[in-house]
Picture 1 (cartoon, rainbow, N blue to C red):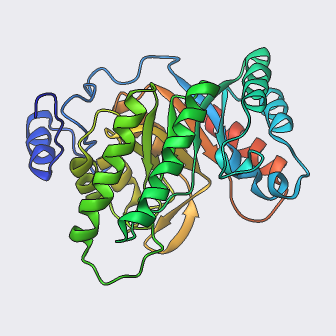
Picture 2 (spheres, rainbow, N blue to C red):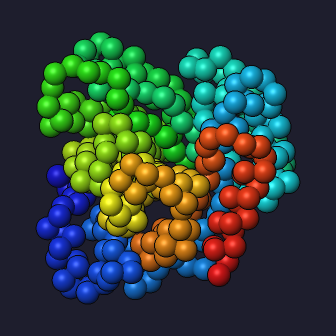
Length: 308
């Protein structure tokens, strides 16, 4: 297909041999053939810090905080943008009224705050095409919301709920078809789908690579969740898929095998910059503790590394 993009292990190896960039300190950074050259890296000042609304999940769900409160907080804390997860809009999964969407958009604009994305909780793992049709409609509905609110992408998942007896490859085929259909719908509205690796159907960098190849759409890319690779060297997996990323999710912890360890943001930023990524870096905090303090601490940590 003209204009198609392929990412393969062979391509990784060939690029590695040509570029000679694989070292013990920084694994090879793979990506689409159209990805930016490593020699150029990310232009100075082209990385901006966003906040994923899920950081305030409890407060947003119990009504202690509204989306408007979140916008105000992000501005005061110094964030450049916010990722407004769909779960926190009134009536989700139903689409909110236009006046609500546009008032959120207006408030963000007046605060000088970008909207880096939104997201839904879909699941394409079911074999029942009728059930998946509802999941696709959910994504498409929120693509329209993204278009109205000015968000460039909708964060989606492959899914994990179905326990039916199908192989990974069998299931991957229909998941990819569903994602491609949503991406083509997004193309008509100027909104990309961003598939998050969430240690669900896709657990490894190999899974991510295979799925992105199966989808094979310029209007779909990876939302690289650094906290969802459970492997001996998560930074290697992050680097191997960095060239696929159209957005990120930076978390406080990464998994070394199944053990959580503090994220080494110097390593992460090296990978981000060397792969040539330019755009938003959404942060997400999880777990117990004072959410405000946790978010502010993570912001300060990432900002300090970003500016070195």
